Length: 365
Image (cartoon, rainbow, N blue to C red):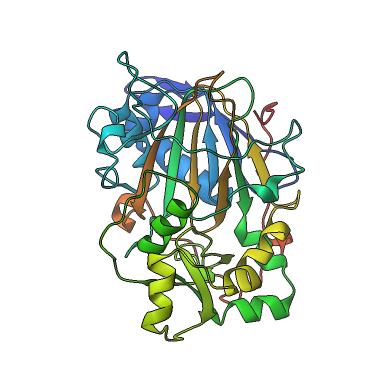
């Protein structure tokens, strides 16, 4: 694909190539090459085009071969949504150059101090497929008053082995569930809180989540209707989720104390929600992305689930920059009308969507 822009007295040929993230027959994910950061920062036509590609690719887009500063990353990602201005409380020391960009990995400064947020994740096998279900699959921030619509990761340094990030198409997977399961999920909501999230991680030995004030409990639909595409997705997977209940079910205070102070999880999370994760991880829906420096990956929290995988932190270095997309762009900033409404009951088949055209030879990772 070649995008042509008329300049002042000349035509500028921008060789933007678009290909599928994995199989050419799948509509989940797309890879863009041939762009530079300055175009993504300032060219309105390109910014609108990559945003449209992101939606067409089911909310998973990779732009390869970029070099950019933290402030440029914020500007590039503002093409996809409103970028949060700062990082979460307590993580300011991991912010890059005082921006809303969070440094993740095992990077240290000259004094040997850790300057990146670090987390230990399970390592995938060499093929990256046999133990996907052992990873911590989730959607970000559902315990927040307004859960973020998406996030972006930019690869600065990648280990030669390990450190992949995995994604699954929660929209197509939900659509392909048996009708009885879809109808059941539509009656349920995930109940979550930040206090439960932190208590659960403390039980696992994390020192980064001390006791703090309890925040209001949040409830989100397990079958979430995307506000733009109007398609339904499996939603609510998060370490902050402590119960999956029929909508409006009250929770006794004593039970809530167990959930939030002691990190207890109600069996309904496994029985009503987590049991569908293996289905979502089928080859038809999942992607294992092996990073290269210069990769920018943007995902939509409302149509995907994701999981980190580990690497040998004693042997290799990994540095990733991350921003959070707080809200969709307003129609005025979005460059056009929202997509037409689709079947509210999730009645799409995979045949309704065309796979991303393969305009270049691209290999995942």
